[in-house]
Length: 119
Image 1 (cartoon, one colour):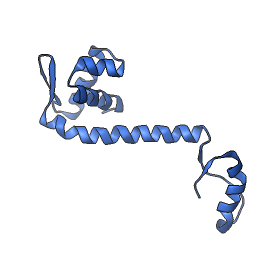
Image 2 (image 1 turned 180 degrees about the vertical axis):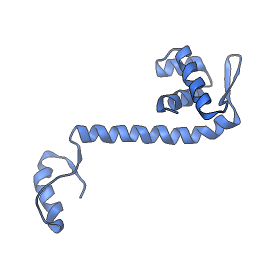
Image 3 (image 1 turned 90 degrees about the horizontal axis):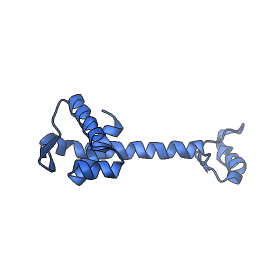
Image 4 (image 1 turned 90 degrees about the vertical axis):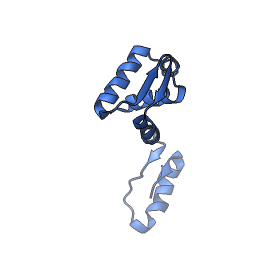
């Protein structure tokens, strides 16, 4: 199970359409179908019911939706945090100061740069 597969699954679950989901994700419908097939094979269950132009969720699909949403949100949150670290917005300040005065010293050395400080 990959994050991409879960994102594809959620897009289909929300739009109830492979076409609209593919458009939303800027993917082709066949690429989306492959992602869903791999996800279903990995989990060993059918997640979607395809009835003509409509797509519905199976019982397993209904159960997966809230879990997939949490996973995708957590991954997006993690990516954002790592971009903050990479950009110098978030991190820790290393200094040779005593534990009790560490926050004050960090405020002096890092406060000027506008970095968030985790003490």
